Amino acid sequence: MLLKKRTLMAGAMLLLAAGCVSEQKYDQLQAAYNQLQAAYGADQAEITMLQGRLKVTMVDSVLFPEGGYAITAKSEAVLKKMVPTLLGLQNTKVVVDGYTDNVPIGASLRRMGITTNLDLSSRRADSVANYLMSQGLSQNLVSAQGFGESSPVASNATPEGRAKNRRIEVTLVGPGN
Image 1 (tube, one colour):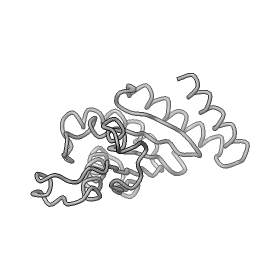
Image 2 (image 1 turned 135 degrees about the vertical axis):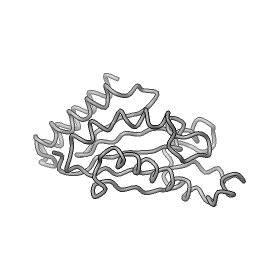
Image 3 (image 1 turned 90 degrees about the vertical axis):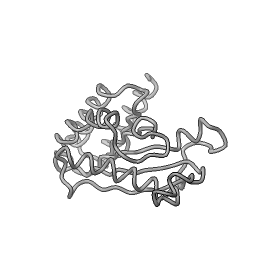
């Protein structure tokens, strides 16, 4: 954790020195980072800040039942933690990206019309985006996109790697408040 904080601070200093992000924007992102770190446990989300963007990554099991894409009461409780932070950044774009592992879609999902991992990741991203908008975020600032299995962060050869690849990333982009 200490190494992560040092890396974050070093990256922030480089951004400020290079003029890539204003000090005001950095302060806003830092405040949002601190709020989200306080709201989420390490088992629920990983929060990173780099190059003027703040990204919250949640593995799919935190938000969705296996093979599911609908927001549940458990999902709402997890997502609701980020809403106050997002509402405080009124001019910031919220980009929701969905990802899957490379395991083919099963019969139950096919019966629901989901035929590819791209379909599943898109529905999951849309579900999260729709929930955030239902909580007051502007539909003009929220977007969602599924990427299926195209951008793995770990090997799909192991169950642990596949679990890391099934994720939702919520990225804050833009000028802040």
